[in-house]
Image (tube, rainbow, N blue to C red; front, top):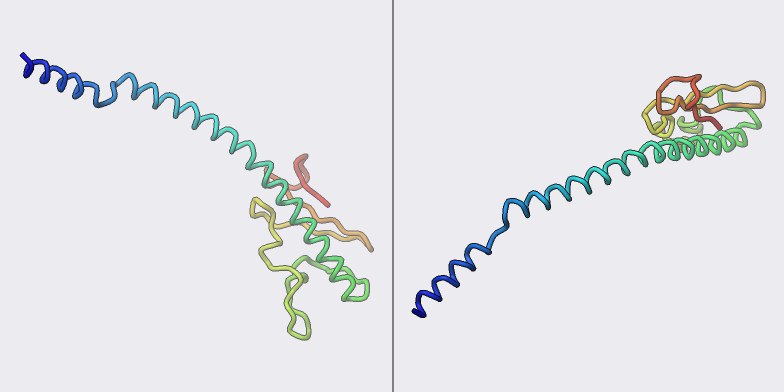
Length: 136
């Protein structure tokens, strides 16, 4: 009699040792919902982060132009590439070439008129002259 009870107890323990299909489906569903929410939050922040990074890059280029102007007696650079060129005495350029593209890997547009200049990124759509352009 006791052997039979022991055997039944062991059989019950074996049956409860794993997860049921319903339990697994509930866990997978919850994980799927959490993943969907997380992905949507991340996607929304990627665009904002790129815009912020592009504004920061424009600020760095603006400061580099000011340094260039001081070193060259008030003359503005003709192109942004001048900011990356080595100086006469072998000193490094003010910026690295990688700093001349926005967060979408598009080159900045630089234009100057007299003593004023503009640095523009085409923004997320990659086209200049649209409402999402970013400028100094």
